[in-house]
Length: 204
Ligand code: SF4
Ligand code: SF4
Image 1 (tube, rainbow, N blue to C red):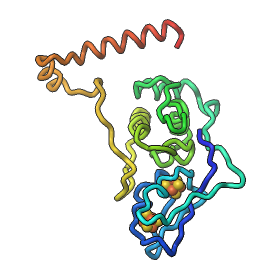
Image 2: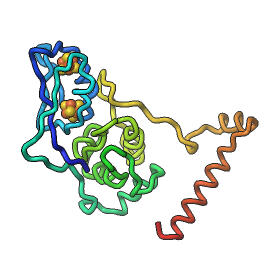
Image 3: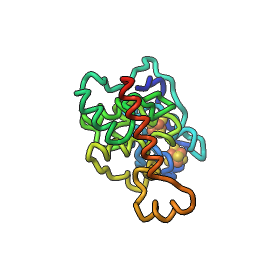
Image 4: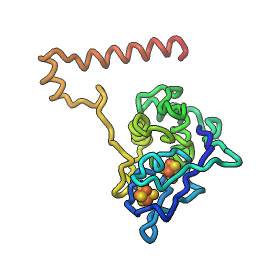
């Protein structure tokens, strides 16, 4: 969920058409037309990334007269399916996956069930990635993968950072090699599983 209070506005006189803003916008709201940046105000989620990164300060954030909230209601989807996606992605449904917007895994899963099949569409529906954009892209990609979706990164953009492996993804040969050097990946997994079981018993 994100309260949208601002939109990006471009000063066309100053814009040099360098395309940087187009490459970083999390909802693909920017297009370069005739070597000038054009913001689709209906798509913009007011994250301010383009404004912060424009090398010639051609973008300013304009306050909205009527702020509005971007959100996918959890109740709009089958909670068992939401839970299934989250658990498959090894996340607690109530786990925060975007600290800037406070968005939880369950809202991302609900957006996916509602038809979002890329990080950009999830951002457009929920406002997630409306802040730093560093922490949330990986859990978003994991949740999409858990739902059986393999999205394609925006062409030429810098919006994605890929997925770093967790302890669950480490190949057996890598585990075997490093177990001799004091890394105990399987023990870590066992410990995680015990914590999850204990939490389930406690009703969490
Ligand atoms: S980053 Fe700035 S100069 Fe570059 S295209 Fe966008 S608005 Fe224009
Ligand atoms: S980068 Fe953020 S502020 Fe700029 S156009 Fe895209 S959504 Fe709007």
